[in-house]
Length: 182
Ligand SMILES: CC(C)(COP(=O)(O)OP(=O)(O)OC[C@H]1O[C@@H](n2cnc3c(N)ncnc32)[C@H](O)[C@@H]1OP(=O)(O)O)[C@@H](O)C(=O)NCCC(=O)NCCS
Image 1 (tube, rainbow, N blue to C red):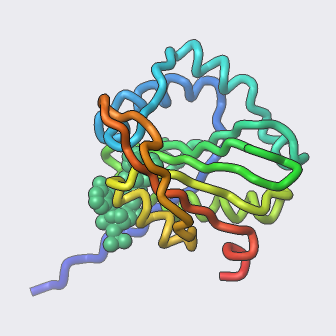
Image 2: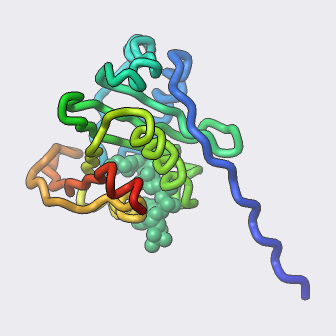
């Protein structure tokens, strides 16, 4: 019997968001599997469009601005997004968030997309410490972080409200030296 052919590796890339991605973001943000472990604010397409219109990725590489997003592409198809919130440029601090649309989850795609963004951030900006927080039940999320070299630094009790319940979060961080020294 012929062995099963190996599945073809899928090409993962990222591109900066454009205002027109607001329709996609709105659709993804409504998916129950995307919302399962994270409280997402209610935002209309118009609000998302306005927010995305402010993002000029060129500013990020001049160490300016406070929020940036990328669309994750899988074989050139839009599959999810990554968000970076700058908490302090003076100290080089930021927080990262991420989500894949349901059909793209559990295929090893997000670690690849995050690695591209982290490499870009740590080679082209002055950021030194990138944090991520996730609900302690979000096993997929913290496994992705640990695979990339994020370290768990603590447990944030009652950190947010999800479906009416207060939920603890884990705090993770990866330093520039952790990532570039791998
Ligand atoms: C969490 C998320 C980003 C993970 O990305 P992904 O590309 O699907 O993750 P991977 O396929 O690389 O899986 C990584 C590991 O987590 C496990 N995993 C993934 N999703 C899981 C889930 N829902 N439940 C349990 N384990 C899961 C995988 O089996 C794998 O385990 P292994 O390292 O032992 O092989 C993705 O599932 C997602 O977008 N979820 C919804 C949005 C979300 O929760 N975002 C994070 C908010 S903090």
